[in-house]
Amino acid sequence: MKETDFIEQNKKKWNRFEQLYESKSNDPEELSELYMDITDDLSYSQTFYSKRTVRVYLNQLAQKVYTGVHKQKGESLKKFITVWKTSLPIEIYRARKNLLFALIAFVLYAVIGAVTTAVDPEFPRMVMGDGYVDMTLENIKNGNPLAVYESESQINMFVQITSNNMKVAFMTFFVGFFFTFGTHILLFYNGIMLGAFQYFFHVKGLLITSFLGIWIHGAFEISAIVLAGGAGITAGNGLLFPKSYTRLQSLQIATKRGLKIMLSLVPFIIIAGFLESFVTANYQELPNWSKWMLILLSFGIILFYYLFYPIYVARKHPDLLSKEEVLGIQKREKFSYTKIRGIGENISDSFRLYKATFTKFSKINLLIVFPVILVIIYFQFDNHYQKQQMEHWYDWATQLELMMGFGFKNSQDFVILMLWTIVLTVLFSGVVWSVKSAEESFNFKSFFIFLKNKFFSIWIGNTLIFVTLFLLPWYFILPALFIVPFFMVNGATMGLDPSAFFVKLKKGFKFSKQHYGNSLVILLVLLGITVLLVQPFAFVFSMHDGYTDKPMMRDFLDILADFVKRIAQIYTDDYIIWANMLRQIVYVLLLLFILPVFVISTLLSCLSELEKTEARGLWKELEKFGERSRNQEKEIDFD
Image (cartoon, rainbow, N blue to C red; front, side, top):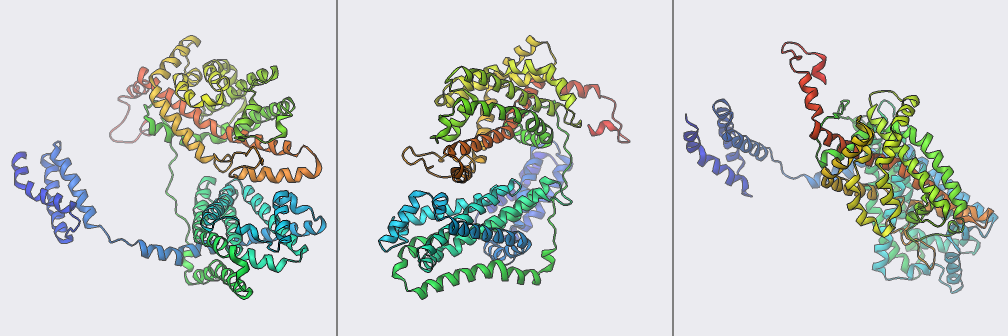
């Protein structure tokens, strides 16, 4: 049959299907019949019209029919109930040891806070600040010790308190990724503060009054922090104790389990915000028996859902408890360095190559680059000692300026800036070497040979980037993002291309110009991802108010720095120095682990341009021409 006759004979049926598929009230039986007819037509077209568009068209129709026939009714409500009824309790039971550990640790920290306050009555000022303690003393004097909860409109309080509690809980979870260290810090901070706060009221003879007021919402709020700590420890333990998995696989499984626990906390955090805003704010008007009932009911709900019910579900479904997480088999990927990559592929491959070479370049960064940076920080602290005795608006920007010297306050800043260009070139060279020797084992001798041969070339290739980033004022950062792509690939070209110095320098400018659009988009996307990832440490609204020296919205680093300040305040008058030193070390570590992604993306951009102009991959494939066998596999078939 001619193709035109075939189409003419069946087009009404095909049109009917498209109309039926687009209709909201489709008939499953008719769809099933159409499925049989169209698959027969598709089979016929594959035999007689395999290279014609009618086959492609019918294939698309068949896929639509298959989707329509197998379309199931929504089970979102049923799944939602099953998750809360079975899945979440199973995950809570699996994490019971971590949750118990978090609870014991938190109670221990609270006891330490209470005992320290008993020994030193001024300790609450160190933990909560003079302003808060003085305000509370004034409220006690006025006969309303918890007046702080009545200071704002209830709606505003609900929004602010709930969002803050949500942020604290999720921060407690996410910082557990760093070998559980961050979670322990936040549990310690909150536990100490709770113990000191409650004992402070005990000294004033108001323990029961404060207990009945605070724990109306605190039963849910404090429980959520402790449970978030247990979820964070669960995630962190996946990295610490991978068992038979790789560390990355173990972290993925543990993070998924921890996130399930965190999602179960969301309703309780919202309820805690509601109680604090609408009930605690009116605590003086409530009879004591109602306060006791609310507190006991809240703790009862927590104990039921996070202790008794998980035990019940685990005993009822032992098969689910013993079920191991099944991961897809991950093939070891062999990266193609002779491939033209688009923007999306460049970004995705940058992260995959980052993962593959992480061990190699991180050894160079931590054993060579980081110690040198610590020495630079030490000298810059002495150079800008007065500025290090204060906190700054947009702290991360000021700290980077002081560390790197691009504020140009004196001659030492120029020297330090030059040292930073050398340090960053070593980092860049370490990443280039790690990528080039990805299939080889780590060897310092090999790296130093590469560094000796390529250091000067890479340094020259990145000079314009150094000039742009270090010499332009911070308010020119946005325009600079549109300038950097003009020479963004220079350093990569100088490190990868084996040509003579001036030849590859010329190539670098040529490749950067050709790749400008892609480089700009890649740079913006990677910067966007970076900004999102560092929010727990350098939150965009973590800015210090000029009048109170308090950040508008605190991040984990603010909390940690605040804790260090309060401890250092006992031993020295220059306590802010220690907090700023901590901040700088954290910022440097973030740079050491973030910059390699940007370097790898420039390497892949350079390789793409090399392939466009020189077709190295094509020539490599031509060299293999005729070597493959139709009858048996050879080693070449796996390249």
